[in-house]
Amino acid sequence: MLERAGVSAVVIEDKCGLKKNSLLGIEVDQAQESIEAFCAKLQAGCTSRTGSGLMMIARCESLILDRGMEEAMARCLAYVDAGADGIMIHSRKQDGLEILEFARQFRLQRPRVPLICVPTSYVHLKFEVLERAGFNAVIYANHMLRSAYLAMRDTAVGILANGRTLELEPRCLGIDEILDLVPGTR
Image (cartoon, rainbow, N blue to C red):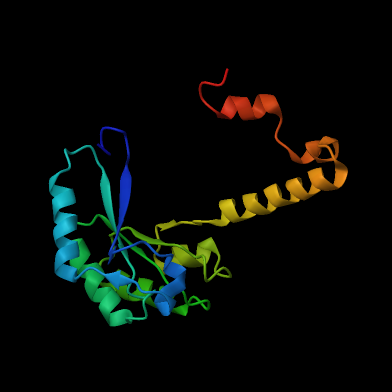
């Protein structure tokens, strides 16, 4: 279905059970699939592809769950061997050293496999630093939503304060512009 819809990549997370935010780490109950079970899922996904180029990206949560670099590396290498086209690695460590060390070690073993990170915790690392470390893609996963929420909150407060929207109109996208963005509204 994903291939027919034109999806070019899908990220599959190695946690199991009810989804919890990764950044909560070990503060909440989060479990990872066994390496064998997750590799079987990857193999099944890879086998079902029809050849249109759908990439299967394996997301490893070992660093999030404080299971260490050695386990994260073992899992990611196994995932690539099972057919994953790329690896997404996640870390809660704010200094960014863990993610940079992971990239260094991973690149020594798999120099050409696409590597992806999500710098929600290590916000001080610039894209260029991550790129030099070996990351092929950087996902700024929730920054648009978090900034949009602040704008919506400020707009709501402004409406309440002014009893109208006139003062807020300069900060709003024009009606014609928003209609052009939403298919089928014209």
